[in-house]
Length: 403
Image 1 (cartoon, helix red, strand yellow):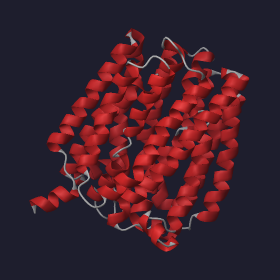
Image 2 (spheres, rainbow, N blue to C red):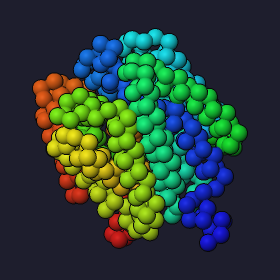
Image 3 (cartoon, helix red, strand yellow):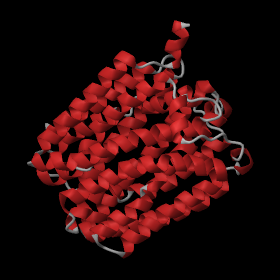
Image 4 (cartoon, rainbow, N blue to C red):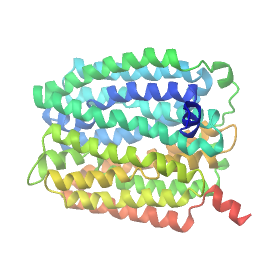
């Protein structure tokens, strides 16, 4: 197989290469310290409610940023919009570096949590624009795979910083590294991503209320199921690191937690390409059902894991939850109307994350009662979402069968 054929198989053209390069640099900086923020907040005296506040803000801001992120990208073009998004994140890093207080972390998070949610609608729209429909799942999978490289390496390096310098100074050093990586990414993305401002201004945009009226019934069913499954993910999300490093009978070190995260990302990366290859050749629904099942199982497996090696198994299960995630994103793009895919993608995430932010805030109160209550309520939400999608979910292949 020649290079051209290999590039075609993996859905790699010049625009995709530029996008994936940006993902590596920005992601590496972002993930150096992000996973350890709950530990950092506790060390600064923030308490459990501050951890819940941070996780809730993450979901709330993801919701509020999704739609304007797509709008700015269509108005300015991907290249200029990414400059704006990157500078916002860098400003947030600076706040955390310069002011060592838990209130500063909350304030800075308003800026540095913006990157993923602001850029995701534009990223997915770019994939849909530069790739044919039978390569979109592979394109989204390659994006997800490359995102997992820094998600795997970042926490390991961040954990080493914490083990070397302590929970407070180590996190601030990690944010310093994040600032440098974001600056490198800013230069790289401007060199590698083509200017698309002229095309962007032709985009058709409607307000969220109108976009909801245009939403396909199949997309609405996927959205409802996804909301329930994200309740499952977000109720315990911020407390996973506390469970592993503080609460279990044999707590792990920061470096070991980084290894657990690397295991999760490695499992996800191994399954992306074969799943994408299969999903692009048939129905997407079975792969989405599988990923929802792994979401539902993870909190229970985590609760039963009380030392490092059982946690390795648990985080392997957590990696398997990515089994159908790129497929789910590609399904959203398939079901979104032509000419308004970025707008519909942003609307979908606006609704989903706005509702799910309630679960993230509520997770702190469940954790205050007991970790068991937190984990098992989360799992029940995941099971409900999976059942709904099994009963009511549909994809483009299913519609062809009906026709």
